[in-house]
Length: 481
Image 1: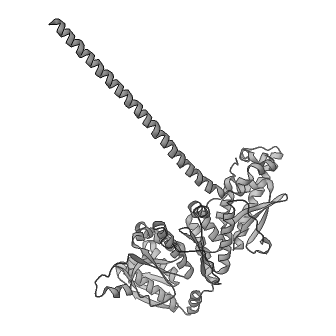
Image 2 (image 1 turned 45 degrees about the vertical axis):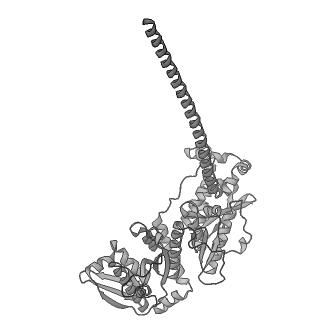
Image 3 (image 1 turned 180 degrees about the vertical axis):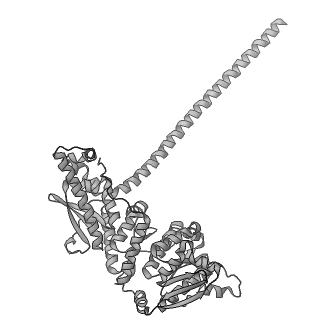
């Protein structure tokens, strides 16, 4: 078995990744050719100020815990918001469109304090997406104290809440409640990319609670639109487990490397972005699934602009990939790339680093080269007779490469496949437990039958003994008489 390489790179926490993803989404927004981005850019001119008078209760509600609600409104609208608690005024600075959006969001937030939010859907600022959530899944989507919705807002830079539309208000007719249709409407404010990511996240949550609600009739689809669009890629259960990874790590890795929005709703992968991003994401996903059955070879590697090739000496491959690919997965997490070893070509192997951003690929290349150099330094120390405690973790490298290739190469190249094998092992363990339980039940049943026969035999023996004692006493009394 491989010994694990030293843990050189610390895992970043969720906030660090969310901040990095948010910065990348801002970069995408700057170069996105969607109309909503163009309109927002054209609306920006000389910033003006709108002043709103609010109550003390509204001020606390708009500010939010540690000012997070105010910051969220400013981030989504693009305006600058200042709250003056001593005078209970709210100043909104920005272009006409930014101020209009900010005022609308502030009014919606204040309306939540007293009851359902009413929105006129006829007013189109190209910043609104709605999704029908079944009533039985509303609590699941909201989360405890609204934490799940807040986490989606933080991840995708959106503003979300459940609402009642003006249409539904009018249909109630003088305050009488109309027949409930079994759904609640969730409203999502933000830019197009953020709204789509948040919408898919909510759809995934609903699909977990009610399988097939959104994906029952969805088939494989690839859009020809060059701008922002969505593709769907259905998968079977084993492919989904493999493509999802532990805690969704593999899915997030593919999304970051491709620059695309990728979310799994049920067993369907939704891939959203422009045509270059969607093409990259589909290709990465296909390569990932191919790794379940063996090595992957990239035919068009010389013409691709999203790859960096790092030659790795054959005797260093095991150290770079780590035990079950742990070191390589950590490099991917640190750099936001998709990496795998293509296969043997001469004395070196090609480790391919894929990603849409060359800066991320450069980070991954530097981390890989650090691992290779560390391995070579350890070998130099062994040749010079300088044995240290660190050499114990490299015992597997003392075998020649042929032996490594026979016993360990498949484990390194196919480390993704271990997830499926572990799941199969779990099934086997459950089956074995069921079999063991059956055997135990049969054994207990046999033991119970044996105990019952023994008790019956003892009962009969005691009965016979009592009968003999009674007969003996009767005969004794007769003799005395």
